[in-house]
Amino acid sequence: MRIAILASEGAPYAKSGGLGDVMEALPSALSRIEGNQVVLMLPYYKKIRENPAYEVEQVTQFHVSLGWRQLYAGILRLKDRDDGVTVYFIDNLQYFGHRDGAIYGSLDDGERFAYFSKACLDALVALDFIPDVIQCNDWQTAPVPVFLKAQYRPLFPDTRCMFTIHNVEYQGWAQGDFFDDVLALPWEYRGCLDMNGAVNVMKGAIETADLVTTVSESYARELMYPYYAHGLDGVLSAAAWKLTGITNGIDIRTFNPETDPALPAHYNASTIARGKAKCKAALQEEVGLPVNKDVPLMVMVTRLAGHKGLDLLCYIARRLMWEEDAQLLILGTGEEHFERFFRDLAEEFPHRVAAKITFDLGLAARIYAGGDIYLMPSKSEPCGLSQMNAMRYGTVPVVHATGGLRDTVPGVDEKGKGGLGFTFQSYNADDFYAALKRCISLFRDDRAGFRKLQKTCMAQDFSWDKPAARYMELFEKMRNQ
Ligand code: GLC
Image 1 (cartoon, rainbow, N blue to C red):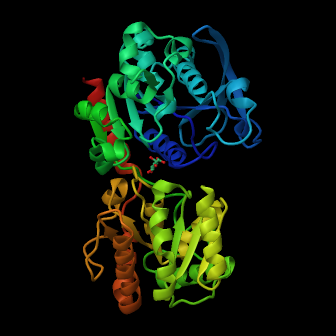
Image 2 (cartoon, rainbow, N blue to C red; image 1 turned 30 degrees about the vertical axis):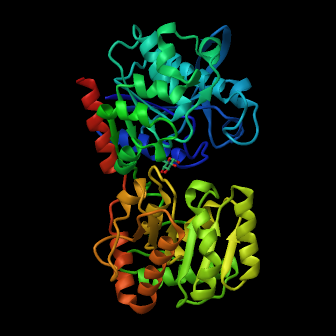
Image 3 (cartoon, rainbow, N blue to C red; image 1 turned 135 degrees about the horizontal axis):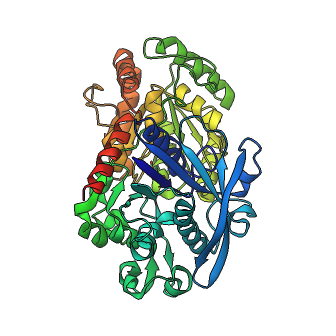
């Protein structure tokens, strides 16, 4: 099957979050399936352009018309990628090549990614790669199915389009005049992009794509409810017939405690006792906590953003420090009030708390390996990847049962049996605290039981094989629609 995957970020080239990880592993997993030809298209951001590791050749160039604008697009092919995926970058200096800093957050983001969406379709035509399936992701590439249906059908007579929601919070809102000025679509499409007079490109994608997916089964159900859907519950309920959840995998080659070059010691489920103890001691030392194997080390690698459930942790943090003999280690950056809170907490409890307010992939890996308990109390979580990383490294998760956390971390009983981690159902700090206490008790009072749970976590298949097969099933289904 010919598959084109379009996205605004993809690791290792450019990544701001989980979408970037998925765009590294999913194309690769799909290209391992026999008979598939996979193309991945990404914007040519400044930091990709300036990275000498990414050698490219220009294969073609043309102009994209976006309303009254005629905009340059250079199509660059990445020279070496050894997994069979063909990576193309869309080059435009004004929109991507000259900008420093974060990938998103410019005032003209709507225009930039409308351009990118259209340039991808034009590029597929110019490259004469007319795919069976286009898979596009989040609001940045949401204009793709709309353009496809409204203007590109003659060029792509049999191409089907899947739109995947990684996070419904960001929808691509614009003022009403964006419709004529930038998208310049035929008037009959105004309705499908309209939300109270404004333009919402994600809504347009949900209505025009052949299938809509999201990144876990529970989140697919949650998306029908106002609490989770950020205003799109009605639109998503109406599209329920074509909405499916496919739980993400993780890159089990990169995240492998037996080979991960970032770790001070390597281990698998049978050598976990020694290997993980070494990783824990080295980690405690690295972050300045007392080296002690008997104190449970609770860890968290996260963006310091509200929906990650940090308010619950802030609420219980001091009580936790007074009542429990445990250590807490946080790695991440984000909202300033959270950064300040954890810095202060570390100052107040220097022997118990370490806060690393930075972005450090190596340290993240050492934390997955060196921690005992992984905290992820997210308020909502479309899928979440780090709980899977943690489990793969034998760190027991304590999570809020929502979205992908509910699907990947079935709850255990008091004895730590019958699941993979400790869960709480309603989003409140006392329930979180109770789940955490149960986990700490298991660690302290039943080491054998805790070890068994760690091994059960490590034995799970979090690879992309199954999700990739599910994507293929849905691609086939679209083709037969
Ligand atoms: C978004 C979601 C996260 C998900 C990731 C990859 O970042 O917030 O839950 O794991 O996308 O799909």
